[in-house]
Image 1 (cartoon, one colour):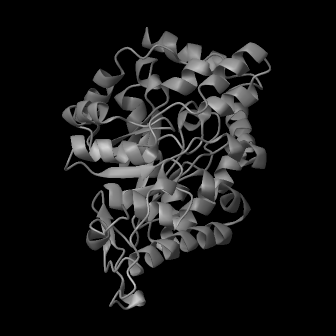
Image 2 (image 1 turned 90 degrees about the vertical axis):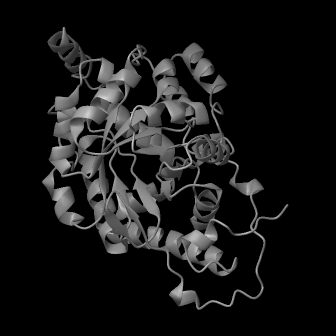
Length: 355
């Protein structure tokens, strides 16, 4: 049965409308200026720090360092990549890896399904670790694939091909529901994740892709042994809106657009998950557009802030452009610390907010 499922997946993606072309379409849509207007509200605009006019700090001595999956980070940031077709993705992944290493921040790759099925590495091979030898790198598989033929063997292959420190399992039920030919059988995904946790031998991270994770769901995942939760809330890329742009069927497009602002806003998701799971590491992503948003995510309970779409234009250009982009995010985060009197991340987590 498992061989039939894998064969079926391969057959569905052999033509030009297959997964590689689809992912390249995704990239074009997300980078379109008119698409930015279709985002939901992540909630960061409603959060305001109380300004400290006497910070009594040396700006250059502010400590943004932390640890993640046993590796040191110079700043609490995760580059949460969103890649296109294989050739294009290869360049982007290389640029992001170089930026991550230069700045000492973590890197998560996009879905490795194309590479696992042998239709191009998209830069997802040992070269990625050579470009980023000292920072955490996270592999990535879809939750839906775990009940459609993939198992521990494929997860290990995803990890091994990039020498990753952990594996992300991404959850995208809304995208699959509105996508033509989407994977709609989600029975058994939690059990499959639990099996991965038991057998993979590396941390398993679970993330949404733009609709958020509730406190109750986070608790179920923690009980299954998941090591890290990435809330990936509403306010970042709306994959329902992306699929509405891709389809030529007006009825399908209308249905997808109905759900364009569906989900738990990122700020609320962070607070819910932290309340439900006080000790689990949380990545706050979804609409993190700058370092001030990153500071707010950390203040609300995240351990790291994740950014994807906001860095894509730079990552397409060069490693230098990607590095400049994320360096600016780090400096904006540092300014937020300085102007709240926060000497380090522990202090930032206690920084007063305006009522």
